[in-house]
Length: 173
Image (cartoon, rainbow, N blue to C red):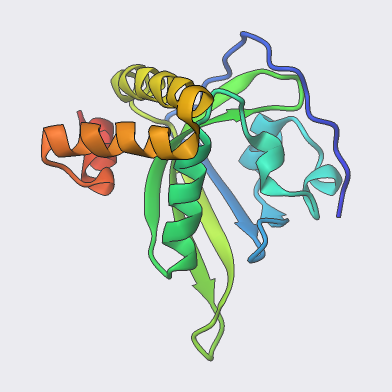
């Protein structure tokens, strides 16, 4: 497994182009086994640095741990998930993505990895989600992941939506 030092975040956004699609694949432990050219370009890592590295090297500290727990719980149970994710490149710059993560199965029906396809998120969705994520991170600092999950659950209940419905609605708005 590649050992990569985590960069220090900088306040510089990299925007995906409208026609960009980032594609990557990991094994069941989240180790990167494939990344397309756009993934390599936006991450600013070389292909050799990415392959064998944990996918969480791209995790920006502005991302609530609760969102990743929800993501992993969903795909490990065999379901796909959509999510807004703020990633961090090698230089510390950030870029937002609208991600679709799906399990990859072998012929025996066992999960052998995960595919993630990311595209440019709706700008108005990013504005909403970044504020929700800020509140979730604050809740995590104060009361851990349970507090963050409670905040997210209350938000979803107040809107009468599931997580997937909320994410899809924001992306379409």
